[in-house]
Image (cartoon, rainbow, N blue to C red; front, side, top):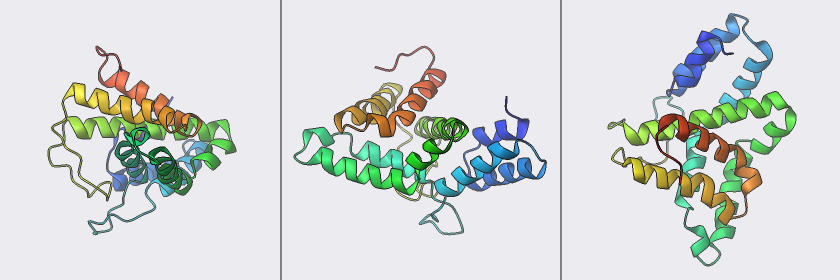
Length: 193
C-alpha cells in the first residue's frame, strides 16, 4: 500500500511536481528501496528537456507512446514493421526498459506502475485537457477532442495490436498490460475491443 505522498505521486501529471513529491517521500524516509527505484525510473523517464524550454522536462514514456501511436499502421507498409521495431526499440533502449525489468521483481512492479501512470495520463489528456500542448512531452500536441470510441480504438491499436503486428509482444507487454488495466479503470462500462 502506498503512502499518501506516493499515492499523490502516481496521480500527478507534472514531472516537476512528481519529483517534488518523490523527494518529499525520500526525505521522510518512506520506502527507501522502492523510492530509490522510483527515482531511477523518474530520471530515465524525464531525462530530456522539453523543446518548450523553461527547464521543463520532456516525458520519454509519452514519447514512446507517441512513437507507438505513429507506427500503428506499420504492418500495412513495405518495411513498416522493421522500421517501427527499430524506432520503438530505440525508445525502449533509451528508457532502459529491458535492464530495469531484469534487475528485480520490485523494479518490474514499479516500471509497470509507471506504465499505468503513462496510460492514465494519455487517456486523461485526450479526454479532458483542452490546453495540453507539447510542453509536457516535448514532441507533439495531442488532440483533446478524441471521442471515447476513438480513444478506445487508439489504445487497442497502439498498445495491443501494434506489439503483435511488429512482433514486439515481449518488449511492449508491460505497456499492453498497463493500458488494459487503466482503460478498464477509466471506462469501467466499456470493454477494450
